[in-house]
Length: 556
Image 1: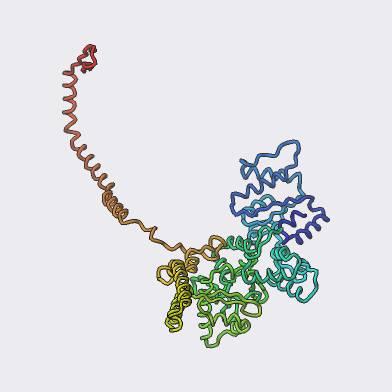
Image 2 (image 1 turned 30 degrees about the vertical axis):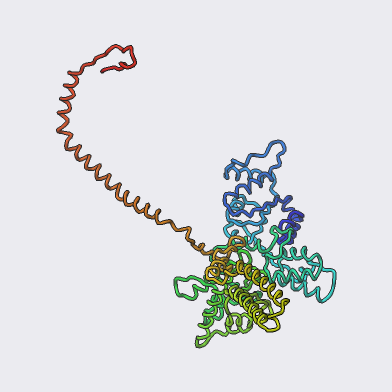
């Protein structure tokens, strides 16, 4: 049980309960734990080959060689091994593909599996009991973090940690190790999570990944493209709030539909609602990104998912989504009746509605439950303005120095001239050095080539390092990609030279065959007569081999 706890603590309590019940009922007598987490179908046979080796308990003979064993023979070997050990339960951890479920279903194994996608087990013919492992409660998170001090500050830190982590056990364990039982350190790391994102907090724990950002990125990569786009659209919606899918029964206009784009061929609103509901439901079942309240038909996502989306989705994408939402809100407000549910939702979250209406140059902000916590406006010409101000400062110092030297009292004072000469030399050296380093930023060339934001948005280094929720754009072409004019001229001459060559050869071959067919009858008789005459008049002379090298030849 210790190894199982270290492997995946999220489902440990449910597994312990089932283990105790089955042990008391004598349902099984041994447990075999196997980790899957492979996305290649060809790796499934290696997983069950390990199962065969674990089931093998014949000490009198060596286990079979599974390297070159076929899947059919492996299937038979596992069935024969299960005859001797019928009361065994197999634990498949982190199942991510249907082939693993299909193979286990054919064997008829008693399996306890963990997965983030419950749809994988829909094709199983045997009975499947799905147990949803939810987040821990606030009291359980306090017992997990366990800070000895008892004060209002400690309670606030524990509540803040539970709010940021959304009850996720893995992230709570990371904060527990980093805080080391101190409330001030816990508050610091919680503040770092909110301001810098999930990737800013890393630690080695019993969890497989060192950061929650890496774990969520792997889960995002396993989503289909349409579901990734739907998840990314939630970046401009508030977290920990029940967002309705269907606003009213008379008007099929949804708050989720204001943000999530769904391609529908038919203009039927019921079909649009069905497709949108299917997308959101898949996000609930595949990765537990959303939670669905079936009674009120609402969806919500946690604060941890919000922090991850704020960090991962690019600012330009969020800006586009906000402009879409803003235009659709204006279209809804122009209706005669309007929708009271939509108005009530945006009035309730006034900070969100204000961020939509007062949107400026770029979007790079995050929200708390009580309002907006940060907002950053990026000026693309800030480097040019700073460089211009520094140049004006140098000019102002020179003007002040000239005014100082023109004074009558300073004109005949040698100490003033020495001081002025020192300041002039120092100013000239500083301006020369500054001009070499930063003077080029006043030109159009440097302003175009050395724009860090332009480089990051063009080549998208985050798509390589952290993963990307949208398909990245192709790289910007540069002059080195274009072929030279000489190469183009050579290719044109080559194509002109070999143009219609195959057709020309076919034509020449047809003409040759026609000429041969016409002249074959007339030349056959003449050829036979000439061959007979030549055979009669042929004379063969064999001369003796010469003695010298210069006359060494043979005549025939």
